[in-house]
Image (cartoon, rainbow, N blue to C red):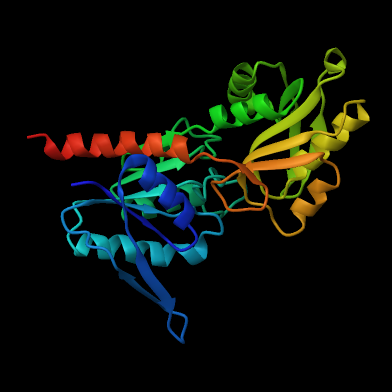
Length: 303
Protein backbone atom coordinates (compact mmCIF):
# COMPACT_ATOMS: atom_id res chain seq x y z
CA UNK A 1 0.00 0.00 0.00
CA UNK A 2 1.32 3.46 -0.88
CA UNK A 3 2.46 5.73 1.95
CA UNK A 4 0.20 8.45 3.27
CA UNK A 5 1.52 11.99 3.64
CA UNK A 6 -0.31 14.15 6.19
CA UNK A 7 0.46 17.88 6.55
CA UNK A 8 0.18 19.73 9.81
CA UNK A 9 -1.39 23.21 9.39
CA UNK A 10 0.80 25.47 7.24
CA UNK A 11 2.57 22.56 5.54
CA UNK A 12 -0.03 21.81 2.88
CA UNK A 13 1.96 23.07 -0.13
CA UNK A 14 5.05 21.05 0.71
CA UNK A 15 2.97 17.95 1.43
CA UNK A 16 1.15 18.27 -1.90
CA UNK A 17 4.45 18.58 -3.76
CA UNK A 18 5.93 15.56 -1.98
CA UNK A 19 2.86 13.40 -2.55
CA UNK A 20 2.72 14.19 -6.28
CA UNK A 21 6.45 13.59 -6.74
CA UNK A 22 6.38 10.28 -4.87
CA UNK A 23 2.99 9.11 -6.15
CA UNK A 24 1.89 8.89 -2.51
CA UNK A 25 -1.55 9.62 -1.13
CA UNK A 26 -2.20 12.99 0.46
CA UNK A 27 -4.01 12.81 3.78
CA UNK A 28 -5.64 15.43 5.94
CA UNK A 29 -6.28 16.32 9.54
CA UNK A 30 -8.84 18.55 11.19
CA UNK A 31 -7.64 20.70 14.05
CA UNK A 32 -8.93 23.61 16.08
CA UNK A 33 -8.67 25.06 19.56
CA UNK A 34 -11.19 24.67 22.33
CA UNK A 35 -12.20 27.87 24.21
CA UNK A 36 -9.56 27.11 26.85
CA UNK A 37 -6.88 26.89 24.10
CA UNK A 38 -6.51 23.13 24.28
CA UNK A 39 -6.13 21.45 20.87
CA UNK A 40 -8.74 19.33 19.13
CA UNK A 41 -7.27 17.08 16.42
CA UNK A 42 -8.86 14.48 14.15
CA UNK A 43 -7.19 12.52 11.36
CA UNK A 44 -9.64 12.56 8.48
CA UNK A 45 -7.84 9.97 6.32
CA UNK A 46 -7.79 6.20 6.85
CA UNK A 47 -4.31 5.35 8.15
CA UNK A 48 -4.84 1.68 9.03
CA UNK A 49 -2.08 -0.54 7.65
CA UNK A 50 -0.14 2.35 6.10
CA UNK A 51 3.17 4.04 6.61
CA UNK A 52 2.36 7.63 7.55
CA UNK A 53 4.67 10.61 7.01
CA UNK A 54 3.62 13.70 8.95
CA UNK A 55 4.95 16.93 7.42
CA UNK A 56 5.72 19.73 9.87
CA UNK A 57 8.46 22.30 9.58
CA UNK A 58 9.52 23.25 13.10
CA UNK A 59 10.22 26.96 13.05
CA UNK A 60 8.58 28.64 16.08
CA UNK A 61 8.23 25.11 17.40
CA UNK A 62 6.69 25.36 20.84
CA UNK A 63 3.11 25.91 19.69
CA UNK A 64 3.39 23.15 17.09
CA UNK A 65 4.63 20.34 19.28
CA UNK A 66 1.52 19.19 21.13
CA UNK A 67 -0.65 19.01 17.98
CA UNK A 68 2.22 17.14 16.30
CA UNK A 69 2.37 14.60 19.12
CA UNK A 70 -1.42 14.21 19.06
CA UNK A 71 -1.30 13.55 15.30
CA UNK A 72 1.44 10.94 15.63
CA UNK A 73 -0.26 9.17 18.54
CA UNK A 74 -3.64 9.22 16.80
CA UNK A 75 -2.16 7.73 13.61
CA UNK A 76 -0.53 4.94 15.61
CA UNK A 77 -3.72 4.27 17.62
CA UNK A 78 -5.72 4.10 14.37
CA UNK A 79 -3.52 1.33 12.98
CA UNK A 80 -0.68 2.99 11.05
CA UNK A 81 2.18 0.53 10.56
CA UNK A 82 4.71 3.31 11.11
CA UNK A 83 4.70 7.05 11.74
CA UNK A 84 7.58 9.25 10.63
CA UNK A 85 8.28 12.96 10.73
CA UNK A 86 9.36 15.08 7.79
CA UNK A 87 10.62 18.35 9.28
CA UNK A 88 12.06 20.57 6.53
CA UNK A 89 13.46 22.67 9.37
CA UNK A 90 14.46 20.88 12.57
CA UNK A 91 14.34 23.06 15.68
CA UNK A 92 16.41 23.03 18.86
CA UNK A 93 19.75 22.13 17.30
CA UNK A 94 21.77 25.18 18.33
CA UNK A 95 21.92 24.70 22.12
CA UNK A 96 24.35 21.81 21.78
CA UNK A 97 26.33 22.37 24.96
CA UNK A 98 26.07 24.14 28.29
CA UNK A 99 27.47 27.63 27.64
CA UNK A 100 26.60 28.89 31.14
CA UNK A 101 26.07 27.00 34.36
CA UNK A 102 22.61 25.50 34.72
CA UNK A 103 21.56 25.75 31.08
CA UNK A 104 19.44 23.03 29.49
CA UNK A 105 21.10 21.27 26.56
CA UNK A 106 17.85 21.55 24.63
CA UNK A 107 19.10 19.78 21.50
CA UNK A 108 19.40 16.53 23.46
CA UNK A 109 16.10 16.98 25.31
CA UNK A 110 14.28 17.73 22.07
CA UNK A 111 15.85 14.72 20.34
CA UNK A 112 14.70 12.39 23.12
CA UNK A 113 11.20 13.87 22.86
CA UNK A 114 10.88 13.36 19.09
CA UNK A 115 12.56 9.95 19.23
CA UNK A 116 9.88 8.78 21.66
CA UNK A 117 7.11 10.03 19.37
CA UNK A 118 8.18 9.01 15.85
CA UNK A 119 9.68 5.96 14.15
CA UNK A 120 11.95 7.89 11.79
CA UNK A 121 12.92 11.41 10.75
CA UNK A 122 13.75 13.26 7.53
CA UNK A 123 15.03 16.85 7.61
CA UNK A 124 16.95 19.41 5.57
CA UNK A 125 20.40 20.60 6.69
CA UNK A 126 20.06 20.48 10.48
CA UNK A 127 22.45 22.75 12.36
CA UNK A 128 25.06 20.10 13.17
CA UNK A 129 27.58 22.39 14.82
CA UNK A 130 29.16 20.18 17.44
CA UNK A 131 27.53 16.90 16.44
CA UNK A 132 28.94 14.70 13.68
CA UNK A 133 25.47 13.45 12.72
CA UNK A 134 21.89 13.22 13.94
CA UNK A 135 22.71 9.71 15.16
CA UNK A 136 24.51 11.29 18.10
CA UNK A 137 21.19 12.78 19.21
CA UNK A 138 18.28 10.79 17.81
CA UNK A 139 17.46 7.22 18.75
CA UNK A 140 15.42 6.73 15.57
CA UNK A 141 16.67 6.31 11.96
CA UNK A 142 17.11 9.67 10.25
CA UNK A 143 17.88 11.03 6.80
CA UNK A 144 19.48 14.41 6.13
CA UNK A 145 18.71 16.14 2.84
CA UNK A 146 21.30 18.61 1.57
CA UNK A 147 20.09 21.88 0.04
CA UNK A 148 23.54 22.76 -1.39
CA UNK A 149 22.74 21.49 -4.93
CA UNK A 150 19.54 23.55 -5.06
CA UNK A 151 21.37 26.66 -3.83
CA UNK A 152 24.17 26.13 -6.34
CA UNK A 153 21.77 25.66 -9.24
CA UNK A 154 19.93 28.86 -8.34
CA UNK A 155 23.18 30.83 -8.08
CA UNK A 156 24.53 29.48 -11.38
CA UNK A 157 21.30 30.29 -13.22
CA UNK A 158 20.72 33.80 -11.84
CA UNK A 159 23.97 35.45 -10.72
CA UNK A 160 26.59 36.69 -13.17
CA UNK A 161 30.18 36.07 -12.06
CA UNK A 162 29.31 35.02 -8.50
CA UNK A 163 31.69 34.74 -5.59
CA UNK A 164 30.24 32.40 -2.96
CA UNK A 165 31.10 33.47 0.59
CA UNK A 166 30.71 31.38 3.73
CA UNK A 167 30.10 32.99 7.14
CA UNK A 168 32.76 31.08 9.10
CA UNK A 169 35.40 28.37 8.90
CA UNK A 170 32.88 25.65 9.77
CA UNK A 171 30.93 26.47 6.60
CA UNK A 172 33.85 25.87 4.26
CA UNK A 173 33.07 22.25 3.44
CA UNK A 174 29.54 22.85 2.19
CA UNK A 175 30.23 26.35 0.77
CA UNK A 176 33.01 24.84 -1.33
CA UNK A 177 30.49 22.29 -2.65
CA UNK A 178 28.03 25.06 -3.57
CA UNK A 179 30.78 27.01 -5.35
CA UNK A 180 32.04 23.93 -7.20
CA UNK A 181 28.58 23.09 -8.54
CA UNK A 182 27.92 26.75 -9.39
CA UNK A 183 31.25 26.94 -11.21
CA UNK A 184 32.67 29.88 -9.28
CA UNK A 185 35.28 30.69 -6.61
CA UNK A 186 34.54 30.97 -2.92
CA UNK A 187 35.90 32.68 0.18
CA UNK A 188 35.27 32.14 3.89
CA UNK A 189 34.88 34.81 6.55
CA UNK A 190 36.11 34.66 10.13
CA UNK A 191 33.33 35.21 12.67
CA UNK A 192 33.43 35.86 16.38
CA UNK A 193 30.02 35.84 18.07
CA UNK A 194 29.73 38.35 20.91
CA UNK A 195 26.15 37.47 21.88
CA UNK A 196 22.78 36.48 20.40
CA UNK A 197 22.67 39.64 18.25
CA UNK A 198 26.28 40.80 17.91
CA UNK A 199 29.11 39.37 15.79
CA UNK A 200 32.52 40.47 14.59
CA UNK A 201 33.46 39.71 10.98
CA UNK A 202 36.97 39.47 9.52
CA UNK A 203 37.41 39.41 5.75
CA UNK A 204 40.06 37.51 3.77
CA UNK A 205 41.84 39.20 0.87
CA UNK A 206 39.15 39.64 -1.79
CA UNK A 207 41.18 41.86 -4.13
CA UNK A 208 41.41 38.96 -6.61
CA UNK A 209 37.62 38.88 -6.93
CA UNK A 210 37.01 42.41 -8.19
CA UNK A 211 34.10 42.47 -10.61
CA UNK A 212 32.36 39.49 -9.06
CA UNK A 213 29.03 39.54 -7.22
CA UNK A 214 29.42 38.32 -3.63
CA UNK A 215 26.81 35.75 -2.64
CA UNK A 216 26.64 35.24 1.12
CA UNK A 217 25.43 31.73 1.90
CA UNK A 218 24.34 30.54 5.36
CA UNK A 219 22.19 27.75 6.72
CA UNK A 220 20.04 29.88 9.06
CA UNK A 221 18.94 33.52 8.92
CA UNK A 222 17.50 34.39 12.33
CA UNK A 223 18.80 37.62 13.84
CA UNK A 224 20.68 38.00 10.49
CA UNK A 225 23.50 39.78 12.34
CA UNK A 226 26.16 37.68 10.63
CA UNK A 227 24.85 38.52 7.17
CA UNK A 228 24.31 42.19 8.04
CA UNK A 229 27.85 42.64 9.34
CA UNK A 230 29.28 40.63 6.45
CA UNK A 231 27.45 42.83 3.93
CA UNK A 232 28.88 45.96 5.52
CA UNK A 233 32.38 44.49 5.62
CA UNK A 234 32.25 43.41 1.98
CA UNK A 235 30.98 46.73 0.66
CA UNK A 236 33.57 48.56 2.77
CA UNK A 237 36.20 46.42 1.03
CA UNK A 238 35.01 47.70 -2.35
CA UNK A 239 32.77 44.84 -3.48
CA UNK A 240 29.23 45.39 -4.71
CA UNK A 241 26.31 44.90 -2.35
CA UNK A 242 25.96 41.13 -1.75
CA UNK A 243 23.14 38.75 -2.53
CA UNK A 244 22.20 36.89 0.66
CA UNK A 245 21.11 33.26 0.34
CA UNK A 246 19.95 31.20 3.33
CA UNK A 247 18.42 27.75 3.68
CA UNK A 248 16.13 28.34 6.66
CA UNK A 249 14.33 31.72 6.85
CA UNK A 250 13.80 32.10 10.59
CA UNK A 251 13.99 35.89 10.52
CA UNK A 252 13.29 37.45 13.90
CA UNK A 253 11.19 40.66 14.06
CA UNK A 254 12.83 43.48 12.05
CA UNK A 255 15.85 41.38 11.04
CA UNK A 256 14.61 40.91 7.49
CA UNK A 257 14.12 44.65 7.08
CA UNK A 258 17.57 45.36 8.53
CA UNK A 259 19.16 42.92 6.09
CA UNK A 260 17.29 44.46 3.16
CA UNK A 261 19.02 47.77 3.90
CA UNK A 262 22.50 46.33 3.21
CA UNK A 263 21.89 43.45 0.76
CA UNK A 264 21.07 43.72 -2.92
CA UNK A 265 18.75 40.71 -2.67
CA UNK A 266 17.65 38.10 -0.11
CA UNK A 267 16.74 34.59 -1.19
CA UNK A 268 15.78 31.54 0.89
CA UNK A 269 14.50 28.02 0.37
CA UNK A 270 10.98 26.94 1.18
CA UNK A 271 11.88 24.87 4.26
CA UNK A 272 10.29 27.70 6.27
CA UNK A 273 7.55 29.80 4.67
CA UNK A 274 8.69 33.40 4.09
CA UNK A 275 8.34 36.09 1.45
CA UNK A 276 11.98 35.51 0.45
CA UNK A 277 11.37 31.88 -0.62
CA UNK A 278 12.60 31.41 -4.19
CA UNK A 279 14.52 28.15 -4.03
CA UNK A 280 12.33 25.06 -4.03
CA UNK A 281 13.84 22.07 -2.19
CA UNK A 282 10.79 19.83 -2.50
CA UNK A 283 12.36 17.56 -5.15
CA UNK A 284 15.45 17.01 -2.99
CA UNK A 285 13.27 16.44 0.06
CA UNK A 286 11.13 13.97 -1.90
CA UNK A 287 14.25 11.99 -2.83
CA UNK A 288 15.29 11.84 0.83
CA UNK A 289 11.82 10.79 1.89
CA UNK A 290 11.71 8.11 -0.81
CA UNK A 291 14.98 6.64 0.45
CA UNK A 292 13.72 6.62 4.04
CA UNK A 293 10.41 5.01 3.07
CA UNK A 294 12.32 2.36 1.10
CA UNK A 295 14.46 1.62 4.13
CA UNK A 296 11.33 1.35 6.28
CA UNK A 297 9.74 -1.05 3.78
CA UNK A 298 12.84 -3.26 3.76
CA UNK A 299 13.08 -3.35 7.55
CA UNK A 300 9.41 -4.23 8.00
CA UNK A 301 9.53 -7.01 5.40
CA UNK A 302 12.68 -8.62 6.79
CA UNK A 303 12.09 -11.94 8.60
